[in-house]
Image (cartoon, rainbow, N blue to C red; front, top):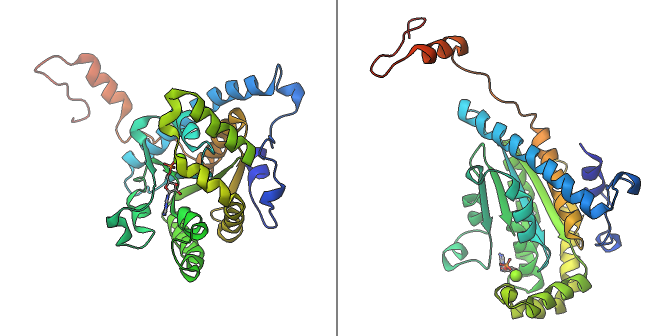
Amino acid sequence: MSTVSDSLRAGPGFDLAALDPASTPGLPPRRRTRPDPKSWARAELAVLGTELARQQEMLFAGVKSDPADRRRVLLVLQAMDCGGKDGTIKNVAGTMNPQGLRIVGFGPPTAQERRHDFLWRIRRALPDAGHVGVLNRSHYEDVLVARVRELVPARVWRARYKEINIFEKELVEQGFALVKVMLHISYEEQRRRLQERLTDPAKYWKFNPDDVDNRAYWDDYQRAYADVIERCGTGHAPWHVVPADRKWYRNWAVAQLMLDAFQSLDLRYPPADFDVASERKRLEHDEPGRSIKVNGR
Ligand code: AMP
Ligand code: MG
C-alpha cells in the first residue's frame, strides 16, 4: 500500500471540514518533485497510467483463462458539482484499454429506476469479472442529494447506510476491489469552475443553472458527505478523500489509489495452457492447406 493511499484514507475520527481542498497529501518532498510539483505529477501520471494499463490487462487475461476468477476493480467517484469527476475519468481511466472498462454515470432516477430499490440500477451497472468499472456518481447520491434536497423521508435515507454497507461487503466477497473516492473541492473553487463554464462558449453545455441553486445547500452537502464517510467507511471498503482543487494532484492521487487496488489483487499474466515449444514448431513449418502435427496435434 502506498503512502498516498494511507494519507488519503478517511479512517476513524476523520474530519472533512479540516481537510484543505488545495492540499497535496502524500506528494514527495519538493526536492524530489523538481522543477515543480505540477510537472512532476503530470509526468508521474504517465508512468502510473502505463502500469494501470498493464494491470488491467493482467486482470482481463486472468479471467479469460480462468472463468472461476471473479476479480474486478470498481472506482466509485463522488463529488460536488464541478468536483472533477469527468476530468478524473478522462485522465485516469483514459490510460486504460476502453475494451476492459465499464463507465456508467448516474443522474436523477428514471421512471423505470424509481420502480425498484435504489441499488437496482447500481447492480445493473457493475463491471463483469476481469473488467474495471467506474461509477460517475453512485448509490451514494441516495444518501446525499436525496437527503439534502429531501427527496425521501429521513427514515428512508437513514436506513440506506446499512444497506450500502451490506451491498459493498457482498461485492468485496464476490471479488471486487472497491476504490471509493470523494473529490473534495472548495466553495471558491466551485465558483471559479462555474464561472469558467459561463465564460467559454465551448463550456456552456457543461453549465446547469441548478448547480448555482445547489450552492445554497453547500454546508448541508458537506455534512451529508461527512456522514457518508463516517458511516460507510468500512475496513473492507474504506473511503478516500482526495483534495481536488488542483487537478494535477487529483489525477495523480486517484491513479495511485487505482494502482494500489490492482496491486492488492496480486495479478499475474496467466501461464500458457498449451505446450509453447510445440506450438512454435507447428507454426514454423506449416503451409496453406497442411497443418503440422506435433505431439499428436
Ligand atoms: P451530472 O453529474 O452533472 O451529470 O449531474 C447529475 C445530477 O443527477 C446531479 O445533480 C445529481 O445530484 C443527480 N442525481 C444523481 N443521482 C440521483 C439520485 N439518486 N436522486 C436524485 N438525483 C440524483
Ligand atoms: Mg453537473
